[in-house]
Image 1 (cartoon, one colour):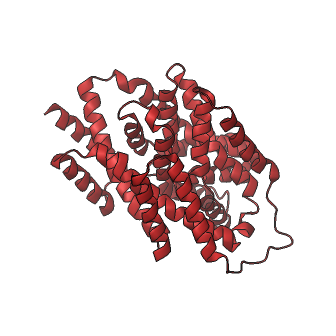
Image 2 (cartoon, one colour):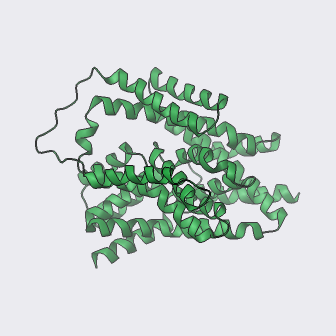
Image 3 (cartoon, rainbow, N blue to C red):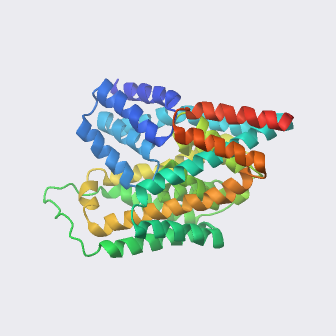
Length: 382
């Protein structure tokens, strides 16, 4: 009965939780702390801090952790399924049926969604810069990361930039003394961490042009995405963007802003397009692969993370990585987002007005999605 209750609650939230990861945290607190009393404020804050510390989809990891707190591992799994299922089906439907629309309709919708993508990414860059780039070093790491990607685009540059940023920030923190570990502090669980590493290694040892490569690309994205859902854009663009037709990537990314639930449901859309012979299997493979590494890390480090976070070297490395992901997103904002969305004065006006509305904060994102899509259709038809 407890498992069914967890599934029902998260399925409902998966249908109504618009607004992205930050808004999802508010939905979860209102429902599970204030409404149902499944956990207290201190426990909720501890689980939230864990998801901010680890790579992966933060709001989905928080839901996974709440489900585990309520009903063990089965509760965690049904929480993930319930919260993800609505957006998974919507994004899969987009991949299956968007191409059946008339060319004029599809062209207008795509252009409107490109404007939306530019607005959303610009807003995310500013928000994340304010959060993660608060001193000269972190600001410099973000700028140099973006510059490196503009000069040498590709997934290899992204990985090197993340590593270098982590090492530089770790060096700055190495002379700090962390809190000594308590003798009674929980140790990390070994099997989820071993599974995390072994799955990653096996997927890269068995690459091909089929589902193994698809799973490896999306698993890597889930394992490397620090800083929230928007950062999955440059990582997936580097991993799979070249294998997608035309504007398909940006269309899916923009559409992911319009659906409730996790932004990582973009994986369902991309997986279906990358496996045209079996779109349902491709969508399911990509979705499971992108979420799995974050969930294994929650299982492995959930009871021990506070002790680990108090170690200055690790805290410094995470600070550097967070700054570098701002640079990753800034680089992606220019190419492919802005270069694809803006080709003239009208496009620039649309993006500028949309950005002002988002920063103004009084226009719900779902209405902005509808407005951009309608304007794209009007411009296409006129």
